[in-house]
Image (cartoon, rainbow, N blue to C red; front, side, top):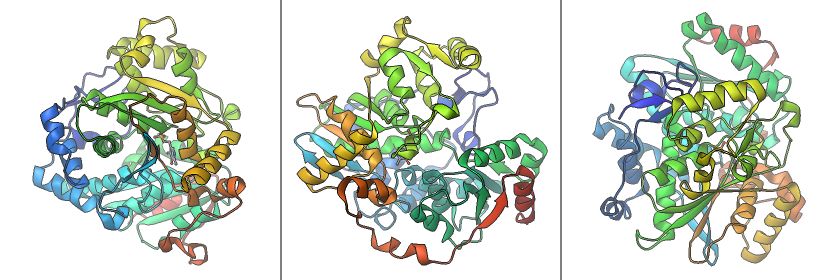
Length: 471
Ligand SMILES: *Cc1c(COP(=O)(O)O)cnc(C)c1O
């Protein structure tokens, strides 16, 4: 399998070449040249496989530069009941007739990002050992991504993590999750400033090419193809649990921010998994809902990005969206560049409303969308607790609200549960007046010793810290 850039660069790359990379050299995103097709005989064979073997089957369609036995061992080591809490890994729970929650948040940090990041940690360790190389991951986090990355990379050989976060601005639970890690290869850096300051520092360090090369700086952000590929697997696993045979359509609703999770659903559908509808659920930051309703993609300025009670979906632009638009415009790189480089660069938006391609988003690719508000989330958390005795987190509530607006009789609707309620306890308390239950392994973590350094919002200070901790 070869990978190409959405923006038309002539190079073709193999999986392990793009594994440790971010954007393609022309600023585009990597995609496979074709989507491998899965027929009904294959689906029948996969239906009864344990999750790690299903992951191996799907991954091996996209990865041909890791020996099969090694890839199989990596999948077996990643997707265990010990790490993810159950043998099913992503158990499905029926809320009411035809509406399901797929649990993706029982990994080490209680959000769905573990599903991909745990695999990435093992793939990185494997590939770095094979190359005899090292990597220093530099990131900025306001919560979920940073902790998922740290729990995936802790103790891994050849990898260090330098994670910046805005000092004092994460929830006590999130701080405790990250800062209580005592592994020597994990570095928590609390920046005197806000999240944007952290992101600016990461950008400034990455733009210093000499420093970047000398200290082998890399990232693990959501445009990484391996992360997206890992997420394709749970659409298959969810499909098999929601159906008894492979001729039945199923729909999925996905709480969305950077369009990574739902893009994996798009890939699964392109492979031939019988997905009828993919519902993109947003909060008040409705860039994506606006596009699927109107055909206009309009990125927001920082000041127009709302701070909401589903904060992991508070984005101003959706960094993986270019992948879907590439397929939408028939993989025409010139057209893609016009939209994402010329139009977006010049005006901050593009308009496909008059383009015949836009109709295809719904008709051919099965996309719908929905949007919710803080009041919707509270109502959905209350309703789900009252009628089904089930606690959901605010992101999953955004999903459930959008799902209910898109139900088709006879077609199961699977809502992806993207975090556990304990991670966003304040909103759950606001809705229900009670604290959500905390898994045993997290009891008392706020009292554990913390491993974190404070640095000013200054890229030079962060560079000096990295240099000092790289030998
Ligand atoms: C990251 C995240 C999302 C958004 O996922 P994308 O892949 O960026 O669309 C939704 N919910 C939670 C809890 C998250 O951590």
